Image 1 (cartoon, rainbow, N blue to C red):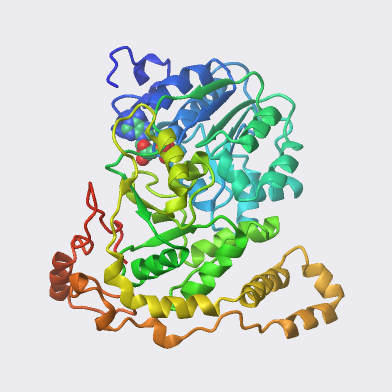
Image 2: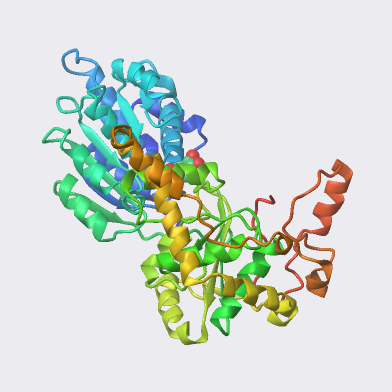
Length: 507
Ligand code: AMP
């Protein structure tokens, strides 16, 4: 919507140093959320804003935060240096991005406003040193912030004026609920607060009650997911449950989906089933288990990043099981195509689920015309050759194997738990027993299944795709030729509508 009445940055009464930074960033006008949120925030209002990554939400809270800090320093009596702004985010990567954005906006007032990220990789000693200098704004995950508050290396009770909770829905789904609540006990009674969230679910409503006072709610009329240029959404009709496994195996093994993929299922049991299934084909997989304790889960995420699951560079989201609600679909789909990166969502649908899918599409399409989830007609007959292997692998994933896999993970969590460290120091025998107990064999990995013989590759794809296997280093001319050849390995598979391109990040 081009609207001539939109309030430009220059009419918001911002400090010239902020305006200069905005100009340097090349932002000619505010995004929708910035246009609405900045004036309200400057009036001192609490805000609850539905905003997704890519909407310009970071600057929507950072600009008023910096403006208020600068105003505080420029007027009134000389104020003591103190931490006045706190930004809570769900991951280290987001903390880095938020700090970097705030710092860019503060380029011309860097001496007046200092920003620290306590979730950066540095050890806690160096973080403590940074906090001793009382930066004006502190950014971090709830666990890090809470830990500094508990150690008294960070004090907010007498100084905090502005609290931002960014990606609030993710904070909950990443298991930070308890830490968030504990953290609130260290804050003063009165402060201004902004709550940003991609979805407004019950958890966010609960948090709203806890931290916001008479907030203005901004439910902007923007689409909840990026447009089709950035995010491609497909549905795949699978006749049977077995077809879902078969299709997933073929898509991953033939590298038709590349880069990092997040697979969503509807129960924990199924996530382990899928992991054990894929591992047999040497497809590296890890389960994000919401059952594990808070700290383990937080570290699981970090371990996830180490294991290659960078939540901000997910190329594909695969709804292996149809999301239970339209909101769940949006939440899952929102894990890809973040921060201007392209992404794909592929949803597997059983014939009996088509009505339910219709409900999801209804919510997604809103006032837009045309289908949202393009039907993707995959020629199942071309991957029939994989069916025998698929069945065999499915059979190996017994209830017992799943139970053992879950048990193994829980035991590992216990062994690495920071909280149990002292307990094990006092009770070394328990530790020994647990260690002794460890080797379980939850899945039979069949190395020969890691390789896809040429005769199994669908004829239409032969020479175009490279079955997922260890790659040899290629010379640069060879790489160029291959790249040209594999522009779109899926083009032989027809579907109605747009082409389904493999993900943006070739591995
Ligand atoms: P965010 O939603 O905060 O993750 O921001 C997404 C991207 O939008 C970032 O790369 C910002 O640099 C960019 N951005 C934020 N505000 C504006 C604006 N007013 N004009 C153009 N780009 C912007």
